[in-house]
Image (cartoon, rainbow, N blue to C red; front, side, top):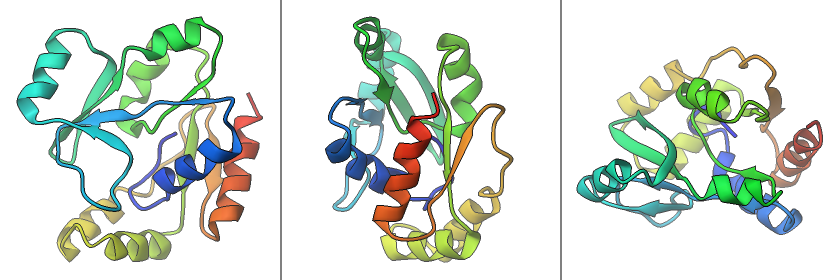
Length: 169
């Protein structure tokens, strides 16, 4: 799953965990402290992230918004055991993810700019200038082969669309 900040990716992932217990939802590792209401992730400091990276603990990683993100290499054994894996990725990491996992299904979750702006503002983590910078990066073309999920309504509507997208594989 990829998409711009404020699209509701983490909200949909949280709701999907209950709706699809057959899927394996993998938490990414981020080198920033966790905050209440923040996305579901494992928080480490920069030196711990760098140590894990050097030890090969990540299947892939990327930098965004001044932080490092990584998806644990354990997803390889989970998939080798025949399980589907869902994680919150990054549009910038799609080429390396697709190279490692050629059969990946990319789900692009998005919402109109006014919805993104309202959600980012409600989080209260960023100044207006930072929100505007995120919004300027929110308009993207869907990656080749991606399924687009418009998440501009209720959680229930977004979840239904997301679960439908997962069935397209």
